[in-house]
Length: 169
Image (cartoon, rainbow, N blue to C red; front, side, top):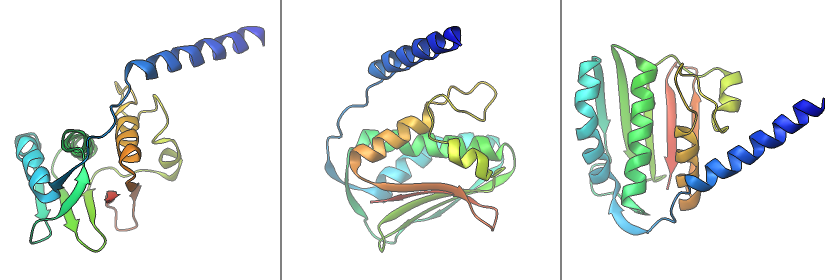
């Protein structure tokens, strides 16, 4: 029992020191066009998706959609979500990217493997990953950035089989 307790304290110390190294900066808020930033991110991801035969379906709000956010942090969040979606799909699937005004929301939905209820509970836990070589810090980064912005978000698989990551601005 003593060894287990010492190991727990050691792991706790490690996690605290690791978290200190990867501190996320405070967002530098500015008025940005969400559709414009999203388009730029998707341009970078189009070749990755094409190589995997993943079809991108863009359904953006028809005019500028302004939000207050840190452009570079939000871009990193978008890139991580799209990358996760593409990895979940693997090969030959669909990725749906939607923005709306009421509510002001970004939704990234995929036809990947889906998330079980058991995994859903663990998704935003440090070092938890469903990927064989995953480190379990991608979703933590996303969560921290979105929390620092004060944005609400959700990630789950719905009855229609689509896994949706929704960010409410």
